[in-house]
Amino acid sequence: MMESFRYPILLVHGMGFRDRKHLNYWGRIPGVLESEGALVYYGNQDSCGSIEDNAKYLADRIRKIASENHIEKFNVIAHSKGGLDIRYAISTLKINDLIATVTTINTPHNGSYTVDKLLKLPDFLIRIGCFFTDIWFRILGDRNPGTYSSIQSFRTGEASRFNESNPDDPDIYYQSYAFTCKKITGDMLMWFPNLVVRMVEGENDGLLTPRAVKWTNFRGHFTSATGRGISHCDEVDLRRRPFTKKKLDGITDIVDFYRDIAIELKQMGY
Image (cartoon, rainbow, N blue to C red):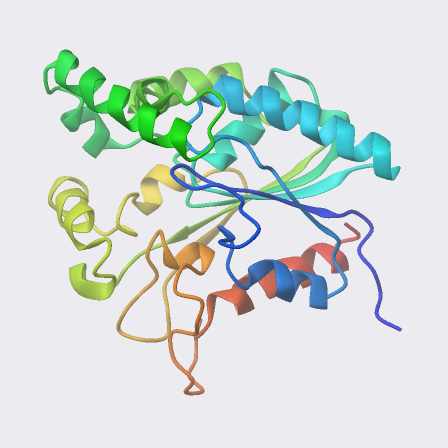
């Protein structure tokens, strides 16, 4: 009989997408986690909500799921901005008693130098762009989109202030991971932002550098076994297929990476 996890896994998505039944943000990943014996739940927060609004939704949802299903705690796996949402929910909204572990995947804990430069554009232009983005995501289902607030939180200065106000809880196990593409054309969906960030900061996953995402218990900087590397989209299995079917050293399928995280958490007693 397969040994079960002590705690369920809560997947917390990043910015720009939602947890949908027929177009899941996480691709094949939930199925692989469930095959290892994990019970999987989703954050379901807004695509482009502010950290504060999304954290409030997550805190309420976590309390509700825990109460209805008699769950003691959760293992959280968060991608990109989702890592900031859950950190705020833990530290400021005090759901720390319901969280056992937090694993962040390319979360901008330290902010982006590229965003610092881009936000030097005239503020009225940025606000206009965010206004229309909010309209679009409201149509797609966001309850309270806040694109302007979200992108401001990616400034390095804002990240420093956020970290000071939202320290890690000593009773929760945190770990962080970084990924990068090997070349600009590794993911054609991300080639332009990859180029821009590479020009400003260096190697990245199409949006963020390892420096930007390094946090507590940093487990390292990973890429694929192929010449493609791993992009911000690849990190959550957007393509729904392995990088290669060949047997190579390194990551050949992103779902294997998540399987290893789950197995390690189980071995650690979570």
